[in-house]
Image 1: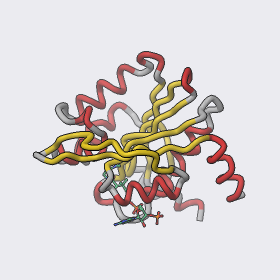
Image 2: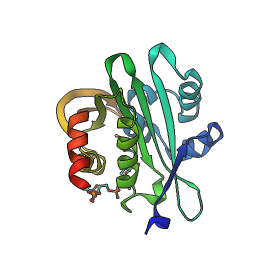
Image 3: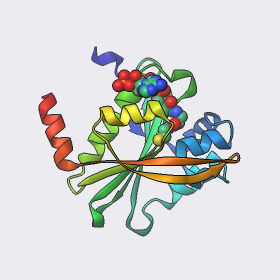
Length: 182
Ligand SMILES: CC(C)(COP(=O)(O)OP(=O)(O)OC[C@H]1O[C@@H](n2cnc3c(N)ncnc32)[C@H](O)[C@@H]1OP(=O)(O)O)[C@@H](O)C(=O)NCCC(=O)NCCS
């Protein structure tokens, strides 16, 4: 039923406050967004990222997923494009806490992958995910990402070392998968 599908549009600067409320502590922030969120608040780091825009040849997009019924913010992700290397990075994927475990990562990651390869220059799409984040890994695998490596003890948090997986997919793999679904 198409009316039940989430909607997507660019994240608005004034939605940073709401996003900030989704992450209660440092562990939540780093799980979502990686080591660059170890020290700053979600608010200050998002403000910085959304303001620097196209720094050093990177083009960033900040996306919002909206509930079909209320048009409220229920998910987010970012894409960072680096055209000289024909690569893009998917990051900062999150579903609003009250809406998790309802299968919403599936449409979000599906849209993100389609959006990334919609840019004709993109040959490789990659991401990092902590190796214990089973729901996230399952969603990425469902949408064609393969595990290609382990970043051992990538970050130290709360006295523990977390390792992260590097996952990627290449354009020909994406096109073969999408072609097989048609
Ligand atoms: C990671 C996150 C986006 C997943 O969203 P979610 O709404 O909780 O997940 P879903 O209900 O859509 O389930 C995702 C998949 O995980 C699977 N899954 C659930 N529990 C699982 C488990 N213990 N082991 C393996 N797979 C599991 C589901 O079956 C589903 O796969 P499917 O779509 O192929 O059926 C969400 O938990 C979140 O925002 N977490 C905090 C931020 C974060 O960790 N972001 C990821 C950064 S890389």
